[in-house]
Length: 396
Image (cartoon, rainbow, N blue to C red):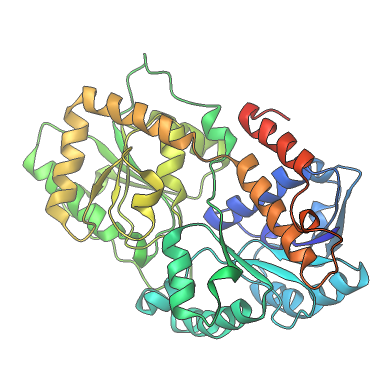
């Protein structure tokens, strides 16, 4: 097969969706030697060692970070022409958006429909654009891939698509967190950590209010609250009402990967009180780092974290404050949560994700073709076995 990849995500700031798309494509090209890959992206990716394989070609275009309108235009009009020029058999868009009028076989990864379910959390321009484009993409795509049962159910409820066209493939955790698990013999640093964008659905205001209640109720606790992430201009305004303890609420903005790993590894506790998630990577990143997690009992989060985190009603400030307190004052509980979390996160790895995406590639490619036998519609057995062994060993 000649597989085209919509690499617009490679020129964007690497937050959750972009990080997941990057890890997926990076793993795919590492394990698959049978098919050709054409990654359509910015010129700065030409020569990147992540894509230096004989069966991978990077097609550079004049798109770059910070130029949203130019990149949208490129995605909608230039990308389909490039896919046709290089005669790809299918085009995979792994980061929510795709060319609306692409006429070939296509796979679109839709991570969630939060802008449909809760439009009040977004700016007017953002939810209007996405409410127009995404349902039409879902209708036109050959196959939709999503990353939780919660998101799959939303897609089936809100979009005109049959169930057999929506594939569920869970995300996974970046190996950099697993390779840098904390040293349990060393005492944690004294801070609670939040990682994610500062947008309304992430529920940061409730987190800050719960933190203030915790400190007021327990003056002996001097743990700081560290917030990593940034507020996007695309989303509604977030107002964080830190008051008495505002000097202990520390905003770090975006940090690089090495710093992020370090923050996760040293935190006493990671709190993620999001109101809605299509998947929710930060709780798993914390678990991979050996750090206990308190998170929400809403949307996809329970199916992702299982029994490995303490879950709360994200609208209940008192419950959140009490749960954070129970973890902070109980070293044994922190250790139990860390152990359960590290066991839970082993269920998710990018080799499994890549193997399942490859299976979707073969199914989509076979649609409309006169395959000589039914096995030609699926990932060949020898490849499936080889990828399964790689997944078990996590060693290319």
